[in-house]
Amino acid sequence: MAYNLKEVVANNPSRFTSGHRMCAGCGAPPAARMIMRALKPEDHAVVAGATGCMEVSTFIYPYTAWTDSFIHTAFECAGATISGVESAYHSMKKQGKLPKDSETKFIAFGGDGGTYDIGLQSLSGAMERGHDITYVCYDNGAYMNTGIQRSSATPKFADTTTSPAGSVIPGKAQPRKDLSKIMVGHHIPYVAQTIGYMNFKDLYEKAEKAIYTEGPAFLNVLAPCPRGWGYPTDMLMQINKLAVETCYWPLYEVVNGKYKINYKPAKKLPIEEFLKPQKRFKHMFKPGNEWMIEEFQKLVDERWQELLDLEEITNKE
Image (cartoon, rainbow, N blue to C red; front, side, top):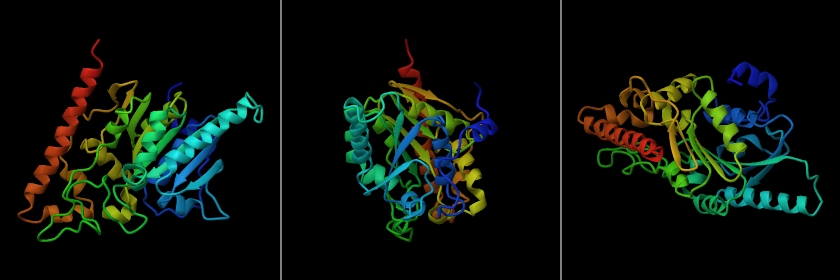
């Protein structure tokens, strides 16, 4: 059946409810809500949430925004926690302690700090062992919950509290880590990069594929942060759009090692369009700093071309 947002909202209950304390204009809540809607209404889920913005704002005991079972786990442990629960579930089914016809899905959510950095080891282990889980990284490009410190997901030149832009250091000195391709290197069945854009179609369809793919799956979801990025709260969807249309955040999936780019802009926008609305990049537009924009554009162009090449190479017969 063709994707229809109204039908999805009408037929699939919201498992991530209102009343949470995430910031206005944050990209994580609409992403989490749509990902959880991708579950079949009759299926149950166990969600593990690493310490971070999402967990501290949606699971404040005794309140929760999650209608499915939710486990708060330490910053570095989401991959280990969700794989352990998945293993226990299958063991209990074999022992007859759970109905054999029941269907439970296992989903972990972690920010970029808990995924790209602190939690990478447990995530890598879970992927390598082949657990039937879906890991979702909501990537807001820094440690936003603890004060906007840089992470390995922070883009080059971004101004953060631990990579401040000044007269000597022009923001973060290193380009961002490409975690999606690192996950592809684990040879798992499904990896996708997505965002809440174009009627949420790309996000919903990839979430559904990830959840119902047998074996480990990884979703990397860009989740803009108004506090850390410095954009007006009503600009969230415009920021999402610009991330895609400039090819800063390409939409693609890798199914059993084969790359597929899901959206190729008819006219790729210059990276300035994405950078300019964000205060974390305002120093790049000062006279004499044009080289930063040029270098940033070069990085984006190189990664986009690499992606185009991978799509061609991996789909050759």
